[in-house]
Length: 210
Image (cartoon, rainbow, N blue to C red):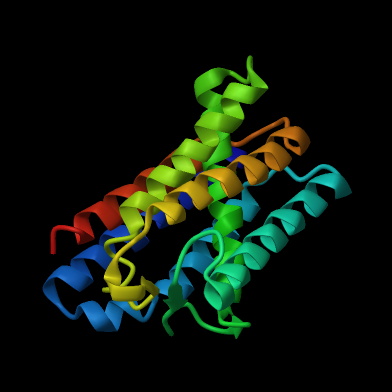
């Protein structure tokens, strides 16, 4: 049963991202970009279905990561702190103080899949190294997404220039969220996480070529 759930999850992940990319490439980029929020919600559902939540502490940690993500982004959008001077577009849906609710969900997704992959790579023999690798994986994904974000009306920095502070902020906040995740999640799912991270990477890096 578990194997079937994972296989179905992985199939949906690749189907959605390949279909979305082909639609943007050959049909209408703006039309398919409008499904960005739906895609992220679907990916979060798939990820949560494959989570091994065993305690309220793990649930609290997920909510805490969401809270950290939202608060730091609200400070960034409204005061230019941490990440720089930027604003969110309309393709990510409902906003709270200028920040889409979905961005908090995205922090959960990236923290979880990066943390799971980092644990797989280190075999969790060094918790500190696991946290650092997880934060670097989050930073790398942000680096890949940044050039595409304005095209998809997700977010854009002032003058379309992404400052160094954005990447520094991502790494520092990533260290915090990875620490929380690594402390409270000991049994981590790897196969869905690896496929979702790979799908994100190929999707956004391919869009950089359009």
